[in-house]
Amino acid sequence: MTQQIHKKYLNLIKSEHVMTLSTSLDSVNWSTPVFYLYKEGSFYYLSGKISKHIEYATVNPDISVSIFKNDSDWSGLKGVQMSGVQDKVGNLLTAAKVLKDYINEFPFTKDLFNINELLKLSHKKISLYVFKPNKIIYTDNSIEFGFKQEIDPGISNN
Image 1 (cartoon, rainbow, N blue to C red):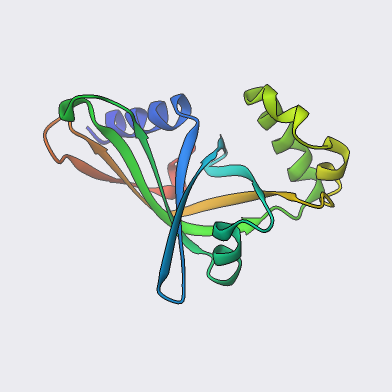
Image 2: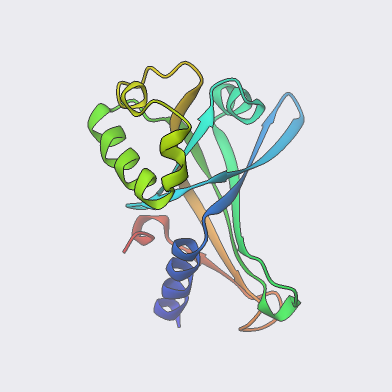
């Protein structure tokens, strides 16, 4: 059953495109949706440098994330809840590879920013961030109401 659940988890995160980041700072919580690219066990996203969630996560990088399949019936509800760490991507080679894939996945983004500035990691308003989960819970009501299974983050990208 664990291998089947792992496959369902991968299918879900590869079929969806938006995740909700939840951050906190000084007992104030904030959530925001972002488009993500899943690559090698990590979730990459572009965000404004002065946005509230980036401000909070810069001080407190321990964040939580949720991804879910939108369904109108409770029995179709499937999702992932994760906790982990956000970081700004600082490696130029990683940034180049991820941005190429990100633009292929979300072609509309190429008109939103100067790719050369992003590749140099010097864009004035936008940066590339990565979320690395350290705990992953897969939920699937189609198996049974309230079904949850922990996914090992170390093998989550296989």
